[in-house]
Image (cartoon, rainbow, N blue to C red):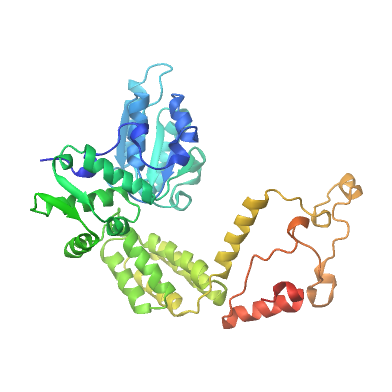
Length: 424
C-alpha cells in the first residue's frame, strides 16, 4: 500500500522546504542556527499543515543526531523518562544532544512538562515542541523560559501553488498520470493554507477519477468536498474550520449557529479550554467596548471550565456564547491597537516628551524631566488638556469610536474633552 501523498512529498532538506522564509530562508535566524551545527531547545507554534514536524525531522537529519518522537496525546511521564535515559546512555562526550520532538506539546500535563525540565536545562536532550495553540496558555513558564519560540505562518498562495506543482511533477505516482490544473481557487480555499489538507484534496480528486486524463476545476473540487465531508478532528483538519464558523456566528449575532458549532466541537471531543479561550478572544475582538461586560462573562466562563470541567462546563460555555452572540458589536479597540502597532513600526522609537518622563533623581529634575506635567485630578472634572503623544505624533488618531449605545458615551466624552481632535 502506497504512503499518503503528503508523506511521500515530505521534504528532506531545507532547500526543499516550502514556506517560512522568515525562519529558514537564506540568512534567517533558524537556518543560521541549523547551519552552525548546534541548536538550542525551541517551540514551533503555528496552524496545522505548515511544516512543524517536517522542520524538526530536517533538523535532526541535518545534524545527524538521534531523533526521538513523542505524542502528547499518547505518551506519559514514563515515556519521557525512558527517552531521557536513552539520551544519557547513548551520548558521547561533546557530541550534540539528541533531539526530542514532542508534537502537540500543549496537551502535555504539568507533571509531564515538569519531567522534561532537568533534561532540557542540562542539555541532555534538545527539545523541539510543536503546537497549534499559544504556548503561553498551556506550556509551563519554567519550560517556556528555557526554549526559544518560533511562529510559523499559514502558507501563502505562492507556497501552495509551488507545492501543487511539485506534487504533479515529482511524486512517483502522480507524475505518471495526465493531470491538468485548470483552476486552483477552490483547492486553495478549502485548504486554508494547510499543505497537508491541500495534498489530501489533490489525492482524493485523483483517486476518485476513472478518467485517463484528469482536468481539475473549481466545480470538481467543490463537488468532491461536499460528497466527502470530513469528520471533526480536534488535532487538525476540520478543527480550524469549525472554530472559524463558531466565531463568525458570534460575530454575526446568530446565537443558534454559535450553539450548533459549539455542539459540534463538544461532540468531537474538543478541549473545553480551547473553546473558552476563543470566547475570551471574541469578547475582546468583536464585542469590545459596545458591551464591556462580555469580556467579564467570557472570563468567568473560562474560570468555570477550569474549576468544574465536562460535562457541566458546557452550560457556562453556552451561556457565554449566547451572551456574546446577542450583544452589540464593536471592534474599535481591536482596530485601535493595530493602528498603534502600525504607527510604532512606521515611526520607530519616538522620544517621550519631557513633561511625561519619570524624575526619580535630582539630575533628571534639573534636566527638565516631568517639568510642566499637569496632574489631571487637580483640575475640574479630573481633566486638563496637555500633550501625551510624542512631539512628532501629537495629532495622530488611533481610536475611532463606533457609535453603539455604550460606546457613544465614551466617544462623546472624548469630543467634550478634546474637541476637534475627536470629531469625525
